[in-house]
Amino acid sequence: MSHVTKEVELRAGAPVAFDGNIRKASCWLHSVKAYFTVNAAVYSTDEKKVVTALAYMTEGTASSWSDTFYQVCEGRSSKYGTWADFEKEFREMFIPANASIVTLNKIQKLKQLGRSLTSYVAEFRSLVVVANVKESHVLIHMFNLGLNDDLVNTVHLMGEIPTDFDKYIVAVTKIDSNIKRGKTTIALTRASRHPSYRPQPKKKDDDAMDMDHLDEEERADCMAKGLCFVCKKRGHRANVCPDKKKKKVPVRQEKIEEEDDETENRRLAEDF
Image 1 (tube, rainbow, N blue to C red):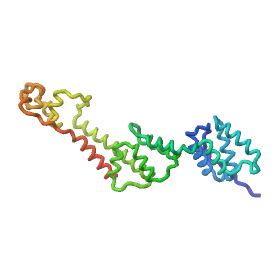
Image 2 (image 1 turned 180 degrees about the horizontal axis):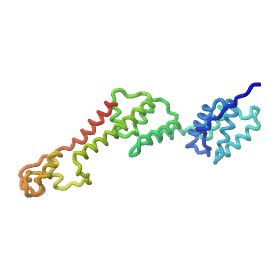
Image 3 (image 1 turned 45 degrees about the vertical axis):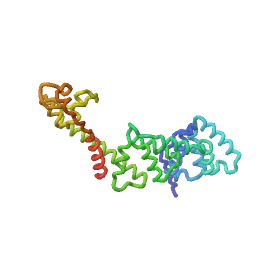
Image 4 (image 1 turned 90 degrees about the vertical axis):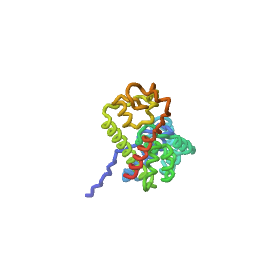
């Protein structure tokens, strides 16, 4: 006596109920198709696919649409028709022809700004699915438009930039992690060199302008010895220094921090 093996349905990743929201329609349809692919042995006919998809359309305008669909099917000789026919009707109802254009506009306005790279990537991927953009070079270009400048600049320093979008995302993610580690290391190094230093809100006063021409070591030395920042003598402050009017104190261009950041970004890109 032969035994028929029953196919086991994998419930992981099962679609959620669809309420007719056109902003979620494309993603929902993709999730349904992916579920059918994973359980191909179970959903082996068009009828099973269509009936199952309708079973998830239980809320909002999707519910009334599915009821109408059932009624129309009653008069068909092929009953529920093919999955391709169902998908076509679903798209005509819930995924307007201009959906891609609207979504492309959203992508062009999308910015990373202060949020994490992970959050930015997740939203970008969800939008390009709706916009139906698949070409890697186009995806990379659009992705860079909203990416923070420090990441974009560091990526351009890479020896070989990936042309595949998924590999490009992996590369950017690694660089983002390296930059974060680098900034942490720099902060810890500075803190160890100046343990008593506490950053204060930037407020330009006379003393601050008078010591612009000094580097960090000279400033620290003057402060430790109680010296004037202008003439480097004791007994008075820089804002009342008698030598202040006799000679014009050169203003030191504060480019050290920018150079440090650029050097660090270049090193991180080379390390990658």
